[in-house]
Image (tube, rainbow, N blue to C red; front, side, top):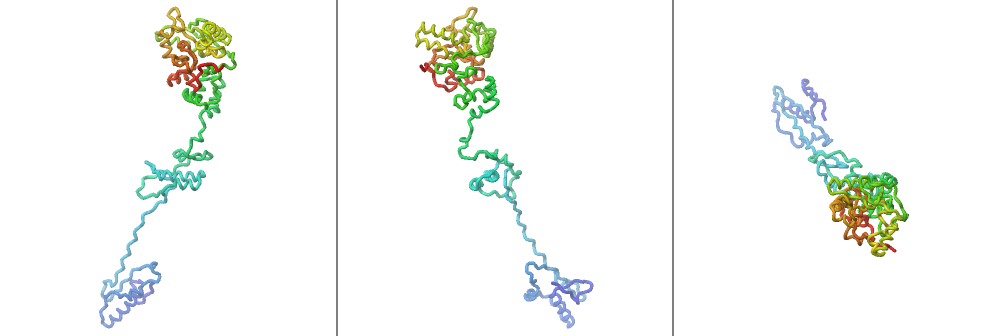
Length: 420
């Protein structure tokens, strides 16, 4: 605190402190008495008198210098300014959702997960388990990106969306089988209803996925007993329903000699025409159709002839009973090789046409239905001439999978004999 000084020089006009005023008066008195001005430093008592009662809040003001007559050197110098206290480094608040630009740390990811679970309604226990150690930003930390949006956190951490299933250790338990979901998919069910088998297989994700779902029993809307589809399976345990089923439309294969005037279902007839043309182009010779579609009544006659010639047990190995023959579907044909004249069924295997059919028929949607070494599954002796049309998609999966019977292909039980 300062007070006006009546002894202060008018030219200076600077107020003095109490101690300075007292010292000035004493100097004046000594000067009058001829005593030299003392330049000794103030003692401790004098220093104590100048302590501001406000303590640390007191502000030190420079003390004006008092000059005796004829002397202009300062008696007191302003005290030096106290040094500024060191500034503490600024601290950043921890980011709520932290993601490093490269190499996201586990702690940051878990912290983001905990925040996301809080937003989505997770429990406190779950949040505590996921939060991990606190993430503290430091001055030299790498550049941080903006917080992750909630959908991106869900995608990266596989968290459920709003209203989704609860996260559990066994996530597979809540997965809906693809086949069951497929049966409610409009693109698939519409193709089934329109008997567009190729479109249905494509909607199922391809022939391999389709076959896998059917074999696993997870595609209940697909029936292997429906003869209107190319995937129908007819064997000694699986008769036609109705027993006298007749396919439509039927057609003669174009460009293929038909020895008995036999027809095939239209899609199969077109496929046989394409295959026979490819065989000719490959230089292996002519392939002819000896027998195609047989009605229920025709099969009654054919099977009866075999029983009369061989007996019932032997006949069952080479001929199907009425209502159990693949020929009744219009999707099966017996082929022979022709070089001018046509050979018999038994001749085919030893011809170039027979070798070519065994190697390439699958490319045109056909398979050799009764192969050697698989009578215990198919129920019939080998018939290299008996071809069955299942479409190019399924035939490719059949070939690539190394299958030899439709029973194995679709996960069905062997059918070596009739049930009764």
